[in-house]
Image (cartoon, rainbow, N blue to C red; front, side, top):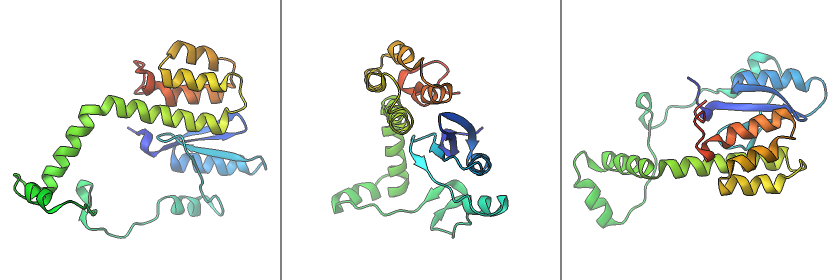
Length: 189
């Protein structure tokens, strides 16, 4: 299953030309860009515009998308990454005294915090992603500002009503990005 973390969507004008894995979208964007009209690509998790180096052959493009990363400290097979954490001596003392040590305790604390506010965090991320995408692609669409207000107010019906007249590709994509903000039942799709 592909998560939104590694998905993106490309538009040429107001027309959606591809959505899916980065490699798939990059190759579709290259083909579409050969027509001379600009292609914009957006990260589906953040709503931010991303750029791919689309020069050269398909194999060269794909190689640049997934460069071999040098080995880093940590346990890469488990997805563990070593990073710096700065704490006061009394905080290190407390962490080191916990069962499993500092790393285990920090992972548990982070997971507990994520679970405690997961719904709010997911909603906020969806609002931000939809807002970024709308700023880039729908800023000149009718009711743009009102749509933003409905998004942040959680007024799903007003949001849907206001984007109804937008070009289909933009309308469908902004709705997909905003779904978690409204807790729609099909938000996981």
